[in-house]
Amino acid sequence: MTDRLGLRKLVEADIDLLEQQFQSAAGAGAEQWFGFWNTAGLRQRLALDQFIGQQDGALAIVLGEQTVGKVDWFTSTSWGRANTSACWEIAIGVFDSDRGAGIGTKAQALLVNYLFTHYPRHRIQATTAVENTAEQRCLETLGFVLEGRIRQSQWRNGAWHDQLLYSVLREEWEKRATS
Ligand SMILES: CC(C)(COP(=O)(O)OP(=O)(O)OC[C@H]1O[C@@H](n2cnc3c(N)ncnc32)[C@H](O)[C@@H]1OP(=O)(O)O)[C@@H](O)C(=O)NCCC(=O)NCCS
Image 1 (cartoon, rainbow, N blue to C red):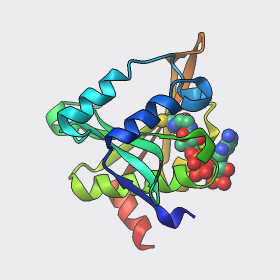
Image 2: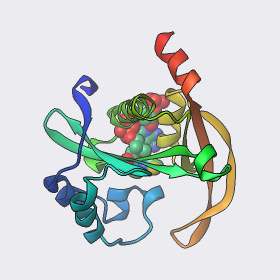
Image 3: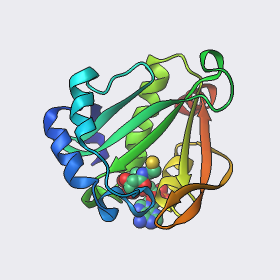
Image 4: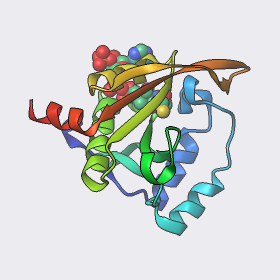
């Protein structure tokens, strides 16, 4: 099934779906639900630059013609000066009804390929909640390396939660692709 999976630019109809899908704990995912958010920003962003920015971006995940989620990337400057030490951080949301079928793993592989192909940055990182075993499995399957635990870094559902930091480097990704 995932051989029909692809990424493409977001369009207006996707925004309606994102509003419907990600405005609840079940839709956003228990570990990604931070309460309601202002979805007007999605339409403004689409009109501004179609979600293809200099420092961040997003694409629709499609299975054939059907939109099944969204991937995002943004610049992380946690490790040094922005002009020399920036890396990408990625995030993903698969629609509730489409989870557990390999889409999360394959879509993030497509995104990593896309980012290493079109930008010269050498490091892609991802953070996920310690409770989010599905996302951890996705990242580990793709060869992301667990770098550490960021303690009590995220406020969610009435409590502080630890996050796990993962990364993959360009040379690791290229080696994996050719092995
Ligand atoms: C995390 C997420 C992207 C995974 O996508 P998915 O399409 O369900 O993932 P896959 O089908 O590729 O499965 C990946 C692995 O997770 C496992 N998995 C799937 N759902 C699971 C669940 N509810 N609990 C535990 N493991 C689960 C699968 O068995 C698979 O493991 P395996 O490779 O050992 O067989 C998806 O659940 C999601 O969008 N969640 C809400 C948003 C979110 O948490 N985003 C990630 C943080 S930014």
